[in-house]
Image (tube, rainbow, N blue to C red; front, side, top):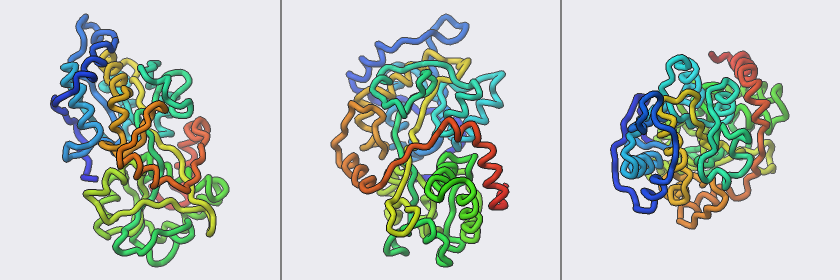
Length: 360
């Protein structure tokens, strides 16, 4: 995936279909705070992965359609999952964002810090219970899964197990993004705890892995390009992002390490979860955009445009990318983390990881 812009970006209007315009016309929402008039802009804070600097990502197309249908300009700010939540915390007394889109456990962290308000978007009734907050404070807009990537030119086949990653061949050729900062990096720690038998064994393993690890990375997206070029042999990622990269980065392959030799590979869902920000300055526009992102026409393009999985259980995409994504997940066991527990103890887990690995 191209390197992500980490500054405010305004995505211009494009062409929307008549059906999408009709859906948006029906969306409700209160006018901009104190103005008595509907908002003409909306600000989205998001984890990276759904926007492309080339302008052909899922966000790029959806935001252009939304603007064309409503006249509402979308201001887009991108960063790591944890980074976006911390920005909301810093701005609590002067809220700038209307929507936040981030990965677990950071969406749960935002909820626990009182950074989200209740809003159940149209179509949320078609989202699986595991992919939305029962209190209505966040809803998945794109489903996704943790994965790893390897350079297909330099490795004839991917590593099979966690222990394979300890091989000397990967010294200074392996990197994973930073837990507590990047959602995918936090996911590596969660998967290790699940696969290896708890926090203690996982930290013992990750301490050993430091011999091969290049070092911290705030962004997972930039690692894919390094794998594709052969600067790295292995890195962490997520299925949506890496599958979407396959045409521009043809030398990276997706894999899922197993706990032991002969064991089945594992992963877990890392949905892009969206919530309406508490005290959002343009809550009415935020609601309209969230409604729009969950419409069936937009969700049907999640695979073909974004390389991800639709959040709606009633949307069954049949395009070649949807088929390819299902093939990528074949034979992989999907487990469900205890997100409430992880969100509650995230700081302690990250502190323990830093201590074990000598990271900061």
